[in-house]
Length: 107
Image (cartoon, helix red, strand yellow):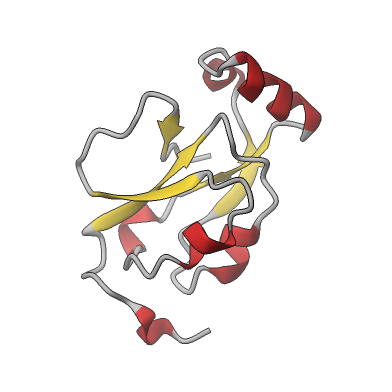
């Protein structure tokens, strides 16, 4: 993948994952040229905050979700947003307060 797709300086924007939507399919990880994403199990303490729909989706997919331990490497190319079939990823300006259901928690 061409890493020259960057639209913003590294770290200006970060991907935020909607925990109620993510099914951990890994498309984001496959397309990210900056190695921002990993896959892992959503911790039980974060599961409690999910909506009923989010809990059902999480159980159906074994609580597997994407995480962004290397969010500061993001250059806002948008490949992850396009690759996510659940539309669970948005790019937000670093330091902005994302919605209460989104998380950039590290596994």
